[in-house]
Length: 143
Image (cartoon, rainbow, N blue to C red; front, side, top):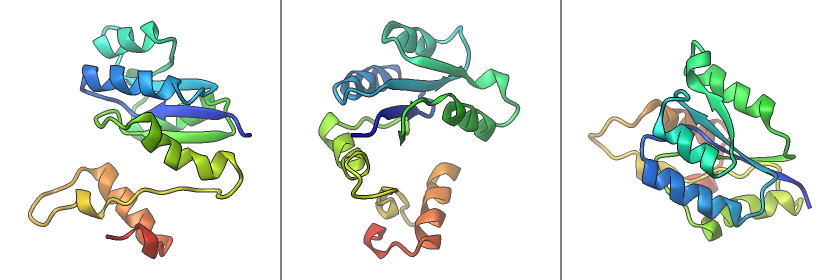
């Protein structure tokens, strides 16, 4: 079975971050990498308490450069990216990584159409995920 690194791409919600980390460790990952603003934030303290690898946002001029730093720091063969503002159960995460760690798939993407509501402006991460789903012509990822 392939080794797993879970990368949490920033969170503003401390309680969700703490719950997510606890659920993630139940997956037995090689490591958890958390992208946090700086070493003065409560998010840093939570990550440190749970023995997570930490990448600091303030070291990168662009937000996405930090994402690249997380990828470079990863030691696992499989990378699971999580949005730190939403909590997933261990079972939900297992559905994403299961096909990859058992060599049934190379990439697993999420359905995001329901996150994009008419009349509301989604954040750029959601827009880019939607565009990737469209570019890959993944009909199964549409509502």
